[in-house]
Length: 531
Length: 75
Image 1 (cartoon, rainbow over the protein chains, first blue to last red):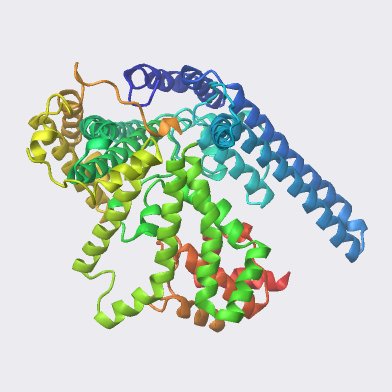
Image 2: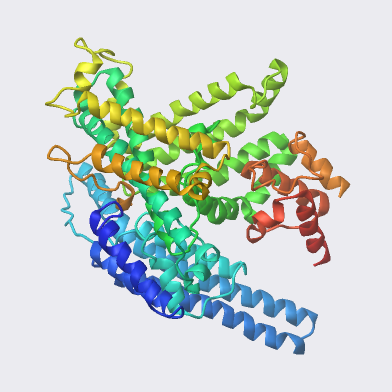
C-alpha cells in the first residue's frame, strides 16, 4: 500500500481520520499507532524489527537517564575531585549505552541491507583466487528501515547530548518511529520535531484538512502527470544503454532527475499533507532544489531531512572530535587557515558522503554517487576563496542575475551527472552511458523526436510530452512562488471559496484526465520506498 | 564581543552581525564557515565547544554565539 495508491488515499487515510476523530483525545495517539502498525504490515511482514528498535531505544534512553540521575543524587556528598571523577565515570557509562544502542541498530540495518552485498563481493574476490562460494539469496527487508534507523539513532544521540529527556513511554516512542505517513519515505524527523505533536491527539479542523488535501493533490499531480510518463523515457535509455546516442543519454539523465524530483517530492507532499490533516507538522524535505547556486546549496534543498541528519550527527560529530580538532590545529600552525579549513572539510566530508552513498543501498553506484559529491563539495570548499576574489575583481555577486543563472545551470550539470550514475543498475551501465557522451554518434540519424515518440520503444505520444511539459510548467511556477515567498498556497486556501474549490477541482481533473493511467501504463513503484 | 565580531567579519564581511538573528536559519553561515568559526573561537577564548552544542539556537546570532562562549568561560 504505497502513498499514491487508491487503497491508501480512498480507504486507509479516510478511515484513520474517521476513527481518530471519533475517539477521545487521549486514545487518539493509540489509534495512530494501531493504524501505523497496520500500514507497516500491509507493506512488510517484519514489524518486529521497528518494534524491537523502539524497545531498544526506549531502554537505552531510560538507562542513560537513570545513571545520570543516580550520579546527581550522590554528588552533594562528594568533594571536588570525587565529583569530577564520578561525573566522568557516569558519562563514560552513558557513552557505552549510546554506543551499544547505535551498534545494535546498525547491526540490524547491516543484516537487512548490506550483508548480502558484502558476502557477494567477498565471494567475487575469492573467486579470483579460484575459490568458489555460493551465496544463498534471502529476503529480509523491513520497509523503511533506512529511515527509522536514523530517527532511532538521532533519538539516542539527543538523549546522550542532553538535548532532550529520555522518553519513558514506549508507545510514544513507537509512534515516533512507526508513524504511517513517514515510515516508508521519511522525512527523517528528530524526536523534538514530531514525538510530542503526535501524542497530543488534537482534534481535526477543516482548514488543516483542506490544506493537507491540497498538498496531497499536488503530490499526486507531480507523480501521475510527470514522473510516471518520464519513467518510460528513462527505462528506454537505461535498458538499451549499450546502443545509446549521446543526446539520448543527456535526455535520459535529465528525464530521470526530473522524474526523481517529481516522484520523491510528490510522495513527500502526500506524506506531509496526510500528517497535516491530522494536525501534525512534519519537516520539509525539498526547497526548490533546481534553483541551487552550487552543489552545497543543492544539498540544503534536496532531501533536506537526510542532509540535516548527516550534518548534525556525523559531520559535526567528526569535525568536532578531538582527533580532527588536533589535526586542524597542526595544519593551521604549519600551513595556515586555508589548509586547515580544506583539511578539516575533507576529513568531515568523507565519512558523511560515504555514508550518504551507502545509505541509499548496497550498490557500487551509490558508493560512487557519495564519492562524486564528496569530490565536488570539497572542490567547492577549496575554490571558494578564489571564486570570492574573482567575483570581487569582476564586480559581480551571487545576486547578479546573469551570474546567478549561470551558477544555477552549472549546478544542473553537476546534478544531472550525479543522477546518471545514481539510476544505473551497475557501474558498468553508468560508465557505458557516460562514455556515449564522448564516443560514437551524438545525434541519431532519424531525429531525436522520432525516437522519443517511437511506439515500440518509449510508448509515449505527442500528447504525453505536452502533459509532461504542462506539469513541469505548473510545478515550476509553484516553485518560483515558493522561492520568492509569495504564499501562493495560503492565498488560494484563504481566498474566496470559488477560487479554492476551482483549484481543487482543476487538480483532481488534471490527475484523473491527464494522469498516466490506462492499459499502456503500469503502476510505477516509489523509488525511495526501496531504500 | 568585539573580538567575536572581528572573527565573524573575517569569515564573511557582508553580514550585519549586530542585527542579524538568522545566521543559520537563512543559511548565511554554512557548516564550513561554522567549523572555521569554532576553531577561531576555541583558539581566541581558550574554550572547547562540543558537537552537542552545534544547535541552530547557539549560532543564529552573534549574541547567541557570545552567550555560548560566556557559558563556557563560566564553567
